[in-house]
Amino acid sequence: MYEMWCGANTSGEPMWHVLTTDKTLTLCGMEKHEEPDGRTPTDRHCFPCMKAFQVAMASAKS
Image (cartoon, rainbow, N blue to C red; front, top):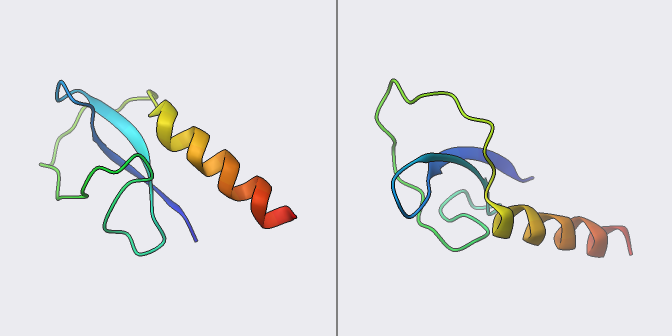
């Protein structure tokens, strides 16, 4: 099962990513690490993660 994780983009701003099933990396290739508490809520999403998730879901249906 895939999970969303609020990490950062390359400039350090919060962004939602999709984690791999083993929960160690994002679908765009970033390592998951613990984020400090108190992050500002965001509705920004990582487009490479979302595209990879869309492809994974499409292939799972086939």
